[in-house]
Image 1 (cartoon, helix red, strand yellow):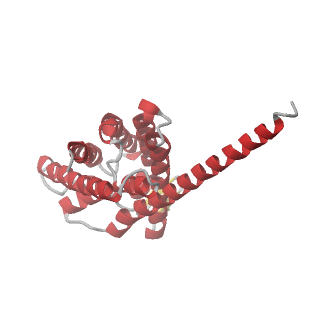
Image 2: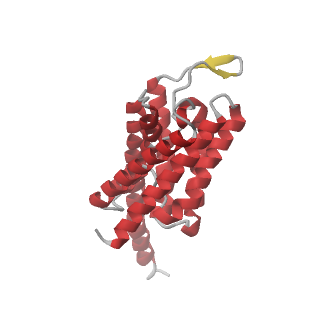
Amino acid sequence: MSNRIATKLLAEFIGTFSFVFIGAGTAAVVGGGAGLSGITAVAFAHGLTIMAYGSVSGGHMNPAVTVGVLVAGAMGAGEAIGYIVSQLIGGVAGALLLSVVLGGAETGLGMPALAHDLTLGATSLTITPAAGFTIETMLAIFLVTIVLSTAVAGRAGNLAPLAIGMTLTLNILMGGALTGAPFNPARALGPMVATGNFNDAWLYLTAPIVGAIIAAILHTGLARLAQERIPTNDHHAAAGTPAE
């Protein structure tokens, strides 16, 4: 293993560890009944962590993001597997340390859960597994699209971690009360392992991957369309030159 790859894998481990320890830790401390102010705190805790560590590891810290980058053809399968393993280990390690610091699993350790009887104005809402899967998929699509359009495509330069962090923050503001909004298998799996509670694990582990694949396909398709339009425009310009 080259030193460059080893450095990246270590960065992904540290980044995901910090992401779960700080993000899930904030969710555990704030608790589930804190309302909008609590969700805002959790959203910014996750987003600011991405901004702080994103430039070190490339801003993944999420197996779904890595799958999206892989499907888009921006990294090799071997490197992607290494990233995902590092992320999952980092997420579990972060949650286990949280369990030690917070004195066990009684706090839930920020584990995501589908909303039951959530009060919305004069009515209440319960998120079904199907609805939860859709929400987690869509949130992953938004995140991976931003990653591919900024960090991978290089369009935002040094501002890529900011764009990714703000997208993650906005996603949690929308979905935090509905699904817990991890849209990240490592972020979801860590607290599950630490608490021994694997409710709806299939949803939280697979929906973000589905969203990432969709985002990568859309990103690749749009990029190809853009490349096809450039030669066409150049051809028309060249054809019109003699007439001028």
